[in-house]
Image (tube, rainbow, N blue to C red):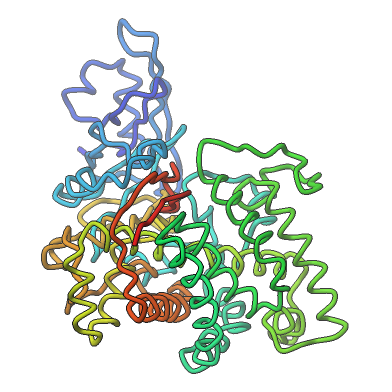
Length: 481
């Protein structure tokens, strides 16, 4: 006999119940018949029964769709969604345990949970099958959104092909390697200015002095944002990151916000500030276009249509945040890695032909974005685990980047790594990071200028990590040279 797969316990216990003949024998007859009814009714008909456990006050809801084989959820005591754990670093030991455990790990989260995808190959599978694992259904983060909030926040990240293809095509030409070479000289000028300043003091607060201003100044020049507004963009971006933590220091009405927070990206009033800035700039470029990305966005012909106001504002927000936060994180963790592994800096200093592989290793090592969620739109199977339509499927990139079945000595920082299919930009497919080439260029230019000055990161002090399960962020760190 087959039994329903899911029986979540409302009392919040760490493991989910999987029914067996022995466990059913202890239940009332009406409850024991529920799985039989599930077998006999049509696959699309849900069957449910509410059962009161013998000698207990807890209530168990049994929900079954079509009859299917029972699947054990490896919930254990591991919780990789707890954002407070990331205040001391990524829980790599837990990720290793999950990779080494057969099947997928079911991680409880709020009143539901998600399937944690931790292996490199499995993340590639999920990434390459948007027709099964959707970005448009649900949300790309762990939590759920009401329908109005999802629509208000919907950006290029929350679309599947062909809608995603339509949006990506608007700006994709601006992010090709050929186009980005035109920004290399200006990127080098910015890097030179920032490094000259920190060299005078033989070090300093790395995030504030180098890691944050470099990528934000590059992306705002591409967008057409005034250089003097760079600090304001960093400020807004910092507050957006805070929206991924358990803390929200801003009042709801910050930046003149009157929108309910659930309708804003990261549930942060800083999103309103970014929206308003983008709206004004977009209106200016609509009237008088210039050679920048905002002009491209407001004048884009998208299948005979223009971007809607909502599409524009969410596109603008993604470009500002994604165009600076991820590279900033990689640059920061790169400096930390070189300080902790001085022999790797010496290798690079002695052999500049390792620059490209060093860039890839920094990106693998840092893994700026920790996870992305998909939602199954049909019943499927992954790594021997049955996944039901509607289940959350969450890809954990730092785990994949330490997968020993793919990387030789994955826990070693190695600037000469030959085989490095790092997955920090996603596992391929339609959502492969649009700014991947830009990030590589910025990191490489910075390394070249540091090498030219002999600026070897030597000491790390006052490291403050951001307690987020979404971004591998560092709020502040002093780097000495």
